[in-house]
Length: 132
Image (tube, rainbow, N blue to C red; front, side):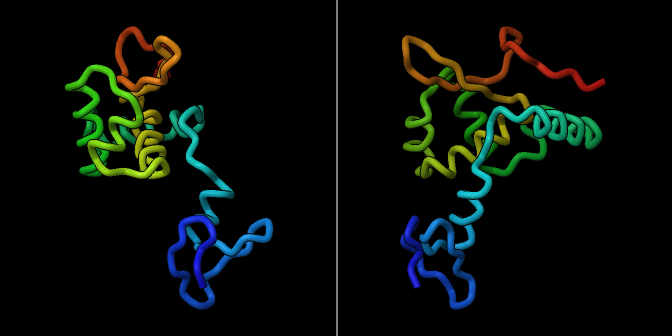
């Protein structure tokens, strides 16, 4: 059986039916719970966990997340498309990895001249959550 969303082969017995569409498990979970960058509970949890583990900066990130973070940091400001092209990521892969950077308050999105941009979290960023 083939997933109607991503067109990948679904092993027998692992297919999921959602609104009349046959999906693989990954696509099904994405439909039920898409990545959310602006999630106060996730920010609080990520920051608290990182503080308890003594993590700062890119500590605790995957290699891809570290590479994306460093790319944004070096570039100063980039678009999602630039990140997807640089690291050969799908939109979903970018969203999942950007959500982690956002929850850790390492990067954030903003609008500039009507265009969505991404930059590292800085002193000028509004809404920083303090975990003391």
